[in-house]
Length: 269
Image (tube, rainbow, N blue to C red; front, top):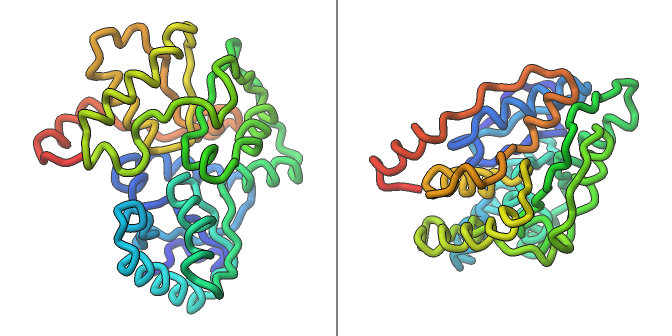
């Protein structure tokens, strides 16, 4: 294990192995945003939170990883973890304190980090969207943690108009990406994605935004495979909107069609 980019050892940015594996441009976008806002941090790239073991029911193995990670964080003097993956945020925020009685590290979702930095800085984000965007929290944020205000406040801060005409965040259907379902039963996960997107298409939503890497990738891949992709909204990842508003050159997006071919060839999700 190791900390990379040693600017501030007690504050680390934890993007999660999923984003690093499948959506590296998102990680790079967030790194640029944090640096632009003067947030000093070290990057952790080689640690798995163990959340996948928790969801799979492997309690003993999950506790072993959590204990090892906690010991490592303490050895490095880590006091605060900034997380951009809702899945890992849930793991550190909800499950680590249950598994580790002495867990005392602050865990902060990246929208909170950015929102506080903007409120304290003189940097004025620009407003550039002429139409509202539907924002999807994902189950990890809304159902598990009731964490729905911060992303919306941040979007409001950068001038984005949020379309909330499909019900309360916690009442919206799951998109099928949670619980490692695409790994265990990809057909079922895809069916859920189609059920999820149906009312959004019926409302003729043009732009769809999420901060969940798993939801983003799952829905984009389903859109690519759908027979009516032209009726789907444009699916946007949160960091892209932030970069545009803050005048930061965002990373070129991943070619998800090529990614899908690679996944199919390797028979992995």
